[in-house]
Image (tube, rainbow, N blue to C red; front, side, top):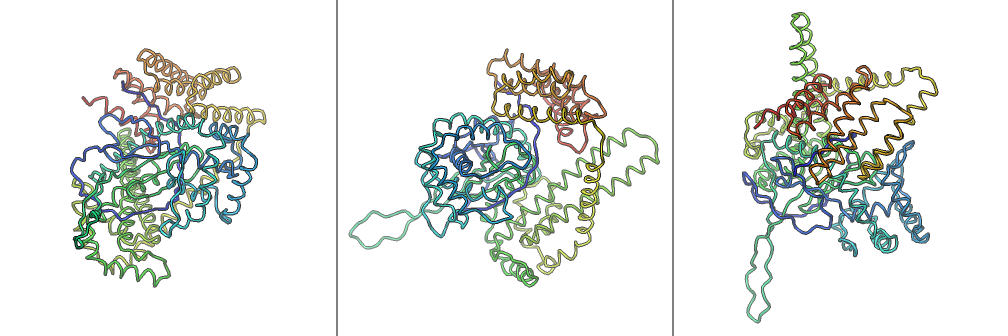
Length: 620
């Protein structure tokens, strides 16, 4: 049975990265790679629920609730890492973990805390920075119950070496904290977060691959020495065989992570994106991580072409070093970073231009006055120029961080993005055509566009600050009442993430007594019923819950104000459209999507979802 998976409000965050790589050769991508059985993995795999006609597993993407990470982050909670931002309450899951750890042996807690304090990074390191090394360590451990640590060696990154001895404390924590008995329940909560991430992540992956007109290489081939049997005969010539590995991009939810830090790790052929609770998968950090997964094997596939331009790349590196910059001497890393940076910047630019085009078409369709139309066209040109300046500024930042061919690849991608041909087919031509003298001058060439982008960004920030600092007069009682409602709704949303739908619904109905006709409560009740429907296995139960969701969305729309609740109205209509579409009621679905398209901001994700939802109604 197909499942209805409603969207949940999300936030955009930043990224910190580190990679652990191994030398492996990649086989050439085939036009339509066949999904490969997943090799043994120490993480618990989230149940696969592929988008219709688009199975993420075909593109190397998996979702894991990794028990090693759960155990590690719980141990850090016991050690005293405080990942909750000042002024905010801990999530329902974090509160439950803290409650479960209340009876932890004091001596063990003291030793955990002492290790953490002894190896703590100096200020201004954030909680996310403190946790990053432990995340890396978790991914190198064996599966529970042994949680075997890697052998100490120079091959391990310094960050892991600094905290490697924490592994023995983690093993003791696993044995004595009782977490082994709670791990099933904890994993279930992580799987629920993975289910939330899946639909928007699928759309992100689809968009990236469509833009590049490519499919990722999901298999790697490694040349392995075959040991000859011992014999008294003279030494036999060395023999080698080819061993294949599955390449995977693994999205790992982390309900105990510090907000604001997607951690990206590469360990052999496994690319891990560790994603905090509430993350928006469409954020650029996750996109860049997947681009890295797609592009890395191309570096080995075309290593001879890159090596043929080694001297020219080193010439650009030398120029940057003369300017005082620190750049890796590895030409393959420079090329890889550059292609990722160029693709990411051009992808974002193209998407922003698409949104602008839709918005402008809507405005032009609504007016026949020539003077107004001329003004719209003039404003559109200015907006397009600003978007292009932002892309230049992003490329310049990446250039300064070592992506010395970022501008070059961005220009090349602009030439092929509309052709429909696989980007891999053009790589040799691209890498053989850059001019090192030109690439050394890119920052100077684009200084004005970068300055315009920075000025515009500072103006936007100043405007936002002025808007938030503008006093709005409310009575103390009204302010306190609104703050209480927001806090209680946030707590109930945490309950929803734990899939405790009956408790969430009961608490929302109790809130209705104090806040009658409050649209946000109706909306939350609708979301609760939608989420419960997604987990229903009985068709009649699922239908009842979806109809209950529709009823509450309608009540939310009736109670909402077009002046103050526009975003809520937008999301409610789009959600009703998806439910009607799922229930094969195309007429009502089209009406709901039309309302959403009329109300929503054309630059927003919900607007795009509504447009896409209506488009699918006409597809066979």
